[in-house]
Image (cartoon, rainbow, N blue to C red; front, side, top):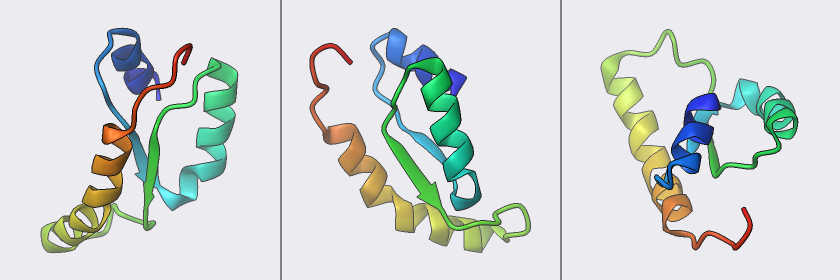
Length: 77
């Protein structure tokens, strides 16, 4: 999450992407950083997936991530 925070501070659009196992951890880290990035979560686990399975996961998340990046940024965020 620190990487996406750094990009945000530089004015570079981005989204935080993690597996569903880390939703609660992401909530807590965002709260501690005072930062609420655009977030997308993919199925867990991913470490044992083949390249083809990872491609399917990425393709499944692509439209959601694109929609996040196309959202207007609210003033003061």
